[in-house]
Image (tube, rainbow, N blue to C red):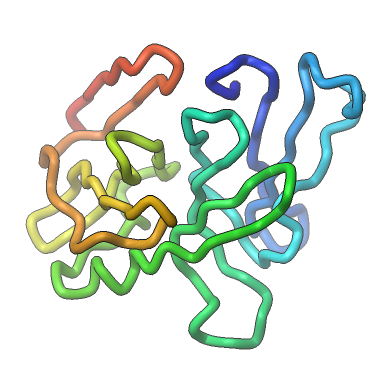
Length: 169
């Protein structure tokens, strides 16, 4: 659910390719019928690990764009669900020196959430599974390398309450 409680955003794998697709359903918005979710973020081959920004307008996600331009491929992205404007964060480039991957092989599902001006995500590194924070600028581009928040855990957060829970893997 969006932080304001107006929308339900969910990701499901495509039946043929297995790639993630993101849908939104309006709970209060009259322009969207509750029974007919709208396929969002259409110009991406794969979208997964979707998290809301506090404004209930934008989401952050991990995805692969269908552009043919390698510079526009797999990364963390922020998109406005109403204008459809999308920004590549450059987080994957910032993660390279630390050898951090948000695609933890030991997790059945990934995790991503907006927190404290950046992206909180579960990721693998040479030290093992941990929770990382990738700071972003006001224009949603990577602001330095990610930092390890806690190791050996898988996080769960609720953007509406600001509460987080941790469990050992």
